[in-house]
Length: 165
Image (cartoon, rainbow, N blue to C red; front, side, top):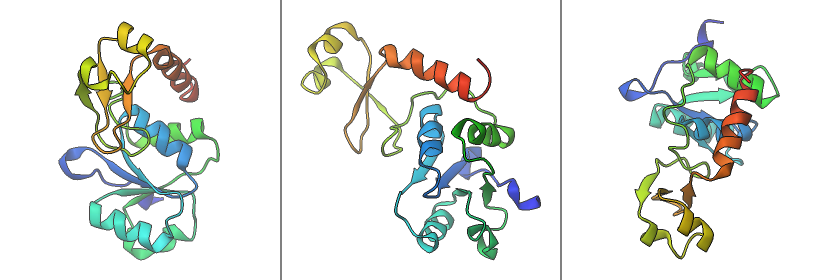
């Protein structure tokens, strides 16, 4: 299908808006570093309006949504119901690299900012504060991230989902 391959966002980096059926995909794509907006309860008209306003590519499994003329060339129809297969569908259009891994907040999609240990001391467990050197913080929701043991597990899970491990 000609419209299946959408165009990149401004600056050459793709920006996406995942529909309500693709919450797990949105989280994994954010984990990888893709800019993916997602709202669980957004209606199709508002999703299309926001995606167009923000120059985003719509990710959808909704066959009614893709019939809208206004989104021609601005969506990727995701065939699979399984997140690993969905990620492989995305990687066929937009290659997945690991250079931006864990650079975005998986909750709100903002780019993370470096934060000092002193700034997060009261936001993380004492053991984490004492054993970690680098912290990242979401400028919007203020969630704090660090490279704990879960990071390697996430990389392993991602490799498995992509069929690489």
